Length: 490
Image 1: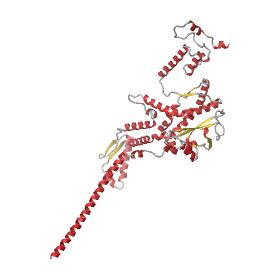
Image 2 (image 1 turned 90 degrees about the horizontal axis):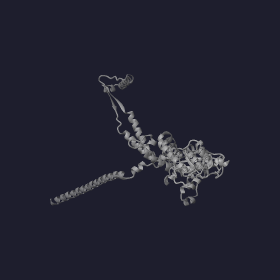
Image 3 (image 1 turned 180 degrees about the horizontal axis):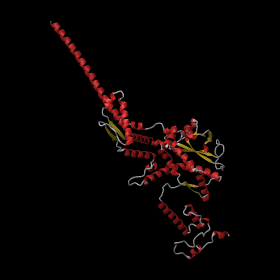
Image 4 (image 1 turned 120 degrees about the vertical axis):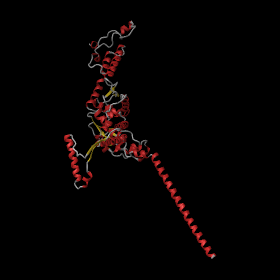
């Protein structure tokens, strides 16, 4: 009996140990699951925090492939959207507005006038240089092709007369240029190694099947690209469209949403008595649609609505509060990306207390720094070619653009009066003779006819400087009347 009791006690103890072991295992498993669950929650929280504070939004808003190399898209993009045409062409047209002011000590006014007339008649400024600059802004690269009637594959001779001259504007995609094969050693020792491998620096271009030497092509590049993108562009620049993609996409999305809202601005709601029973029948839906169609036709013809006594009709209209503010913000974003005022880009006048002069001044500064500074080099090359065509040689000159600021008629007249008074004051002080005064008045368009002073047929100086005081006897002799130049020649 005692042995059986002892054996039973040992079995109970063994059973309790097994139960304790199972409980410990269960506790460990529960602790592990709880730990994993807590770590999962923490990991999820950390992941959400990472999404908030990481660079993901920046990465998602970037476009890795430059749109500049998609020339097919840029062609149709430019053709379709007037905003893009304004962005590309308007700064160039404003930069060349009014032509150029040329001054030279080696050429007289007649030669300079002949040069400006040739540039105007052949439409070289706007039609050649201007269009080439537009293609440089749109495609990231433009050019001016020179045709002097000679062999296109030979280098263009310098400082020699030109008997025939024709200039063509082209984009970078019209100038097929194979990638230049360079010696790796030369590339490694060059300060700008990408230039040796760039197609822009090729020895020859292919212009519609005609092989051109690079000296016959005046290239114009777009916006300078970073070095990683520069390899993709083969040495050319970036399009101005690159900086407007994000804002222009937002503008298009907002406009599409606005069109959808306009389509659903007014919704007719018909509450037909017994509609459920009609839909249960095989032909009930067709009968209901035929009924509504008849009601709508009667409404259009008679301006009246015919309904059953138990039917109801109401019209729901959507309000457009806040859409104008969203569109305004979109226009501001596009104008900021294009670096143009809204009045120039969209034709919207300034509102409120602002006159818009500050915006125009900022825009004029952009035209001076981005467009005019970029066109000076190709313009000088073109003018040198025209000089060689007209006279067989070139002369030194100073080139200036017309002022961008458009003044009122009163301001222009005040400036003309000041110029006239300044010239007359110099003449009165004997610092300019009559012929120089006539030329100065004619050059500034202060006198609309050819005067005798301009031709040198008047006295060189007046009898005495007008407005002077304390004139002495020696001064009277110096200021005595001189014979006109006609009498001297006789």
